[in-house]
Image: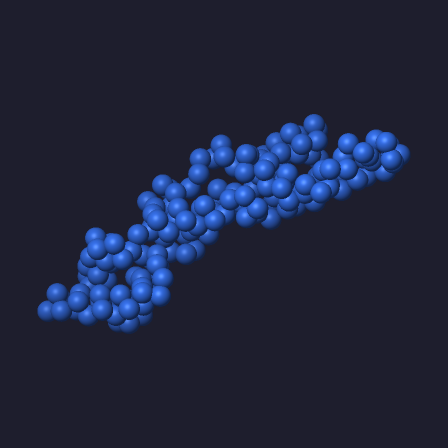
Length: 172
């Protein structure tokens, strides 16, 4: 009886999985909505994981890779995103980058995102007054800080990036 229910659950989910890989959390939710018991859901998910239909670690690693470079997010933001998608805690912990990489990711993100604004930094001293230069630098620091905060980076990381790029601590 249980094996028949497990088979029915597998059939119900496999056709849905053919449209693309799904996290285990979404599969569990779908099976619950279809009325399968907890024991059946657990058996179905375990068998699908063993057969390679569900692999949370591969999905988590793919998402982490996609959220690098111009799409970079902090470790905390990635953690939240992966949990929201329904990936297992074990897969999330294995896929997330080290906390030390947050600074490097934030630094590269700001350099890439604001590259056009950084080009004139060397020209500021020659073409503008000291007050205009400081105003432009302060505006760029504010933009970069807000941008990083929106991507989930901590104030400690943001301050380190501002200090590295501008040689000062951020008061903003």
